[in-house]
Image 1: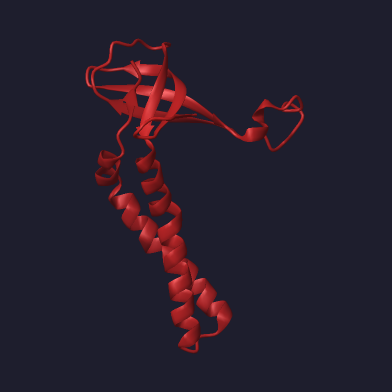
Image 2: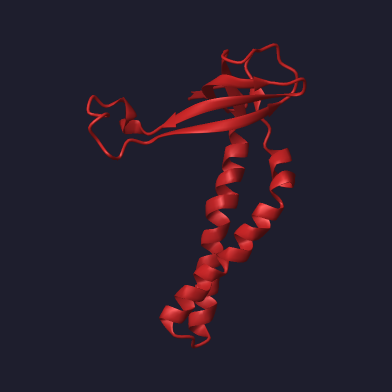
Length: 140
């Protein structure tokens, strides 16, 4: 769900799980486009997933309250770049270099995919630093 304004904002409805003095834990339910289908209960590919988001700040909410979590759309693009675009570029670049160096294609493909292990390990180790850049707020 998006709101049109000068700064695009991504909004999701959620339920407060915990309300601390400096942060609020909110659970949101993401669902795929087919989740509203009348055959949802019979289908095995239903795409509902619950996510818990830590919203820092002081808010006057209690557990069980329904709230709206907001995030700048630019932060969503940053997440896409870190999780999809950079790994794709790394795989394609390493595959090109390895094949042009004369490495056999199956080995080059395997090595190109294995190069992602250190990349995602680095992301994991820097997760606290990265999380500070992704800020969520509650709609008042």
